[in-house]
Structures are given as structure tokens and as C-alpha cells.
Image 1 (tube, helix red, strand yellow):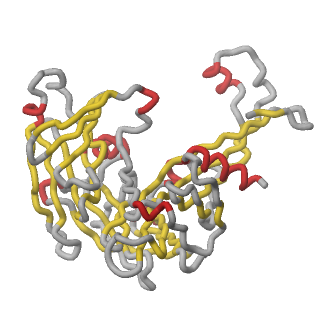
Image 2 (tube, one colour):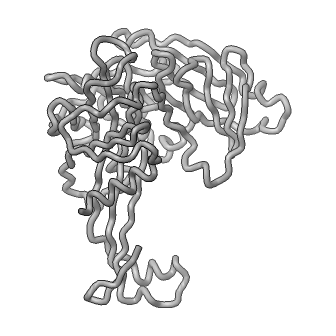
Image 3 (cartoon, helix red, strand yellow):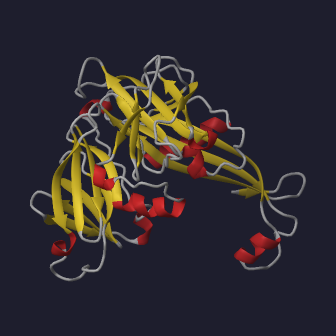
Length: 363
């Protein structure tokens, strides 16, 4: 919305928001970016929008990144402490929110009870890729902590952080689909980044550029399914899925391999190579694929498409989904922690929650 201030200039506020990660207990990590712009004195010229932006560009005054832990069932929010962002004014939304993950833990073992603590964390590349900056926000402390750690990747290899961060086995996992993953216990007093390489035939020997990685992340994906860490990849001929034996050994077992041409027996998509939308969180044999505007569910064991849906452009936002399981205990669970809470009515949608939280920040 725009309003004329006393100086006669027009100012515009823009709010962007995104779900960044989901924890194993169903909590979500949300990110918002509020930007304020000042219009150019010539912004009133009657010109096409693309021409006007070149002649009279908007002036960016400030940007404010905010992250929340959210119970999507009750609508409760916790605002995380703010990062120190020296380049916040020029930092893009994607870069500011990249590498963010959320881990939750219950009392005892397993996922059968409500979470008693959480840790949000972000991993970013520093020193040209030689080191990684780990920012942690454990609920038990209330304040954040930063630690620079040596990169466990091979020399001259820079980690790409475009994949969602996973909560698995009491660790957070950052995935680079050209190389592998690094995991860490965010609650540890002395955290250490542990590397897990991809299956040998999937490892790419050289650093990939941004364009190559954007394409590769559509064809390769890692996720948690039925309590196991899974990796899937697609090429024009095959779809393969693997399961990690354990992160200490780093060994992957090939579970399924499906012929892509055999899937399109009707010929309708015979020339299309699908992209991976998601690994099913409950069924390790199921993989969700995207082909143009068609999203299909593939049973890897039966080598059959079990269902499909056509989505229009307004529903496509991204070619990937973020799986999130919502246990029944979330109805009565509160988010643990010492951060500022923003409680909302239980019948509010996530969109309502994000808008409402922004209004409360401005007060």
C-alpha cells in the first residue's frame, strides 16, 4: 500500500513470506521480508511499467528479515532473535532465507510426544567456501550463537544451499545435490559438521555453477520417509531411489530403479523428463513427480503411477513441495522457548498468521 507523506513523495511497503522448513514434529520455520521503497520524483510519468522502472527506479530504504517458529495447527508463533545482517539492505530474499532449518526433540526417544525443545539454525558459506558459518537459536537458551567451522567438503568445493534443510536422526542436514550433505547436532556444546557423500555414481567431480545447480536440484532430491533418509534422482531414462544405511558409514542402498519411458505408456509425455516434487514422508516407496503442469504420484515398487493432478499457474509457486506431518498432539502443544510469543486464534490460516504477525511487529 502507498501513502503520501509530508514531503510529497510516495512510499511503498512490500511483505514477502515463505515456509522455510518443517521439523519432524510438525512445527514450521517461516521467513518474512519487509521492504520499504521511495518513489522517484518522475514516477508519475505515463509510461509502461518496464520503461518507468528504468527511467524512475524505486529507491530501497530498508529491508527487515524476520524468522518465526510456528505451530501450524494452533497458529502460535515464536519470533526468533534477529540476525546481524551487515548487508541486509542489498541481501535478496532467497539469500537471506537460504540454509535455514528447524529441529525439534521430545522427551525420550522417538516422535510420539509433543516437542519439548527446538533449535533453528542457518548455515552459510564464508571465506570463499573454505569455512561455513553456523548460526543457532536453541529454545533452551533464547539467544542466538554463531560459530565458524571448517568446511568438510573437498578442497575448492563450495557448498550449494538451495535444497531444504532436513530434520533427521537428531541432526539438521544441509544438502548439496551435486556432492552430498553435511549434518550437525545443533544442541551440541561443540558442534561438528559431519559429511555424507551421495552414492558413488551420483557424485559430480567438479564444482557446478548456479545455472547447473538450479537444473540439478529439479532432478535430485533428499528427504525423510518412514524414519529413513532417502535420496532420489531422475535422468531421461531412469528414476532411482536410495536409502542411507546410517550416517556414520555413509553407505547408500539402491532401493528402486524405474524406467522413465515405461511410465508413459500412453505416449502423452514420452519425451518429458520429470522433476522430483517431493519424497513421500510416510511411504518410502512413493515419489511425487512433476511434468509440466501435471503432478503424479509414483509407486516405485509397483513401477506404476498411482495418481495425478493438473495444477494451474496460480497453484504452481514452485516445482517442489515441502512435506510436513501434523501429529494430533499439535492441537494442544505449545512452542517451547524463551522468545517472544505471538498467539493467534486457533482457526486462523497460515496466511492470516503471517499478516497478523507483521502488524504486531509494527506496534
